[in-house]
Image (cartoon, rainbow, N blue to C red; front, side):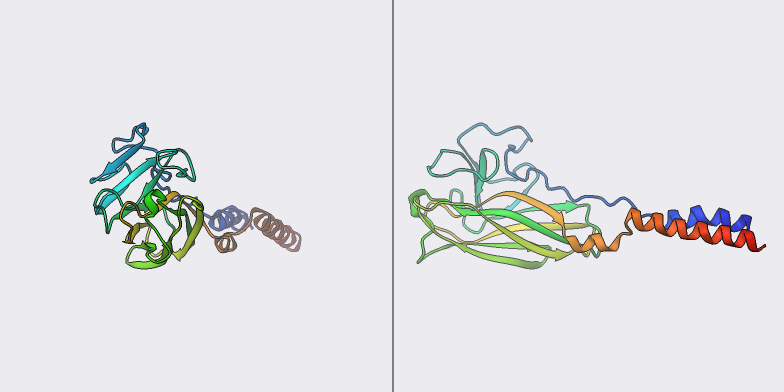
Length: 221
């Protein structure tokens, strides 16, 4: 009887889900300069790594609200034009840690285009590819002009196969003076994961059942 009473708390502890790390994207809305300080100038052209991100090819621009009307960031004051000065083929990436292997995640980001000089047209749209590690999860073509500039949320979903994964945005086609624009990158677990963790109420009911079993055994001894 004593051994059963001692085993009960240990059993409940074994059912308690461990604290899961939360994946965090650094500088998700592109408000920080290379040194991690706030941006201030109307436009920044990068040939090297912006804060939290790795620029492995091409050139990008951080563009501030109002610099090239009707340019307005989706979040904060800045957004990224994936085609900077002679920046065709830009690749912007970040290694994100804190994933739980086997869990499903969704990465959402704002997608638009640089409206300056009608760079992304219907006959020659600007292209973007989104990869997680070696897998291409989304390909997009954007076009328009100053009359219909707008941000549209795009989402890619995947199952984590490692605790750290590399997210990359790759410019595939661009216009003469601009390209696809991205902003407000965020990540979240998908609802399916919630079903894999025992709910506190379920643990409580199970505990009551086991306590009843202990009491029953006590009376029968």
